[in-house]
Image 1: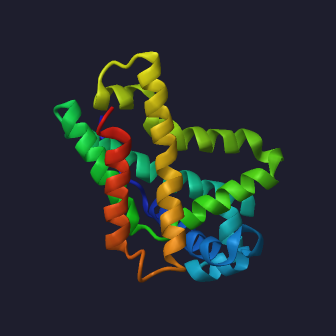
Image 2 (image 1 turned 90 degrees about the horizontal axis):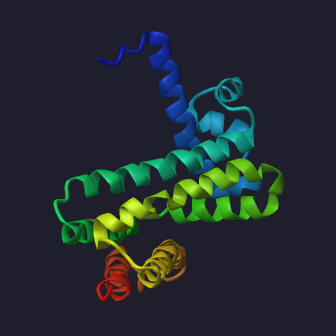
Length: 205
């Protein structure tokens, strides 16, 4: 059944929501969660502070919505790449390309670090935080790994899970370090390192 087109009011709300998330990323990355002000986010989005509260309950709600949105974008990107693959070997190659391409995004590691620090300091938000962490890991679920590597025994599955868990921190660490060592850790260098890391972790699997 075709989706009903959005009316002008819905389109405007959607645009405002998107602008607020984009502005929030800019401010949270620049100022951190603690330092970020909703007034600054509203100004960066070209909206009023009231517009922020029309879409989000609080700064915390906006921050978590941003993290969830960005996480979902990455998952959707990976899933779409894998859907084009006809074999496990092609799926591994697509995942490798996706992983190496993460070197392009200089802000995601900062946002991820802010999220993890937030999670450590705000236990009262544990339910939503847990769901967000599960979303981060959803691209490493059983269907995903079987598509790439086929049926796995317990030992192989454990090895794959450890390797998948290592991928995110490695790319985040390299990109964060590149702010301090830009000549050594250029995007080209990071892509080369990530390719080597991926091959070391998964080629022999």
